[in-house]
Length: 272
Image (tube, rainbow, N blue to C red; front, side, top):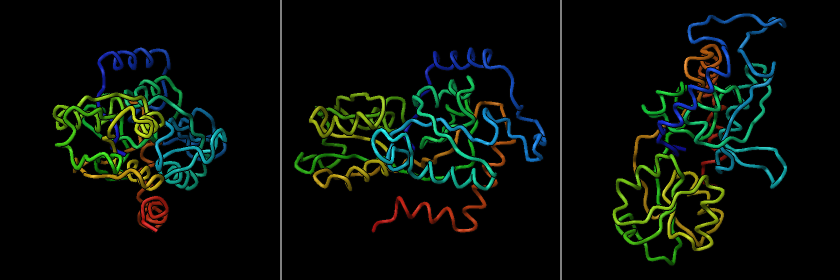
């Protein structure tokens, strides 16, 4: 969404340690096996339930239906729920810090079966996690208050620009927002209020998320977009449970072929 992109060496070490503690699960070369109930054994943490780690909120990809409800919705949530239904599985979403997800730590530690969190597929991340086929193409973008006078990235010199730590948006800002003071935030749940509260002058992050903010509050607008060839993928523990990953890929393709993917996409991204 994509959203996020550096992997610290320390986190990689933590992931290795987590692997040693977590024990063994289905290997990358394993063939599908039958569960006791006769269905495919996907090596799930909880039988019959696909447990998904996600950095929530990140609207419109994943967010609470209402504050404190513990019920989640969004493009990632709906898409993966539809995929799981095809596999005769329920879904359970678990709020997880993005850095521990994109580094592979949470996955290798057995906190969840997979991750769905608007995560861009990058070569750096592939060193620590396995990805599904891509399921969403995205751009980066610049969001500002309409009265700010900021027209593009060249107007950010001396300005406080909010970015989410460890994301591709942060990387893009470091390279292109010359003279700007980059301010890191843990997630969009604190990044967006910081802009509204005047702590920062702009947000540089995934276009769909900034467009959602523009929609929610017309006093803010996306003034520029940046093509970065980003594609989101679902995340899996490195070298683990290829059976589940392949099943997710197969059902993702099926949803695209039968039109269900488009229905879910239009729900969140088509102007009304």
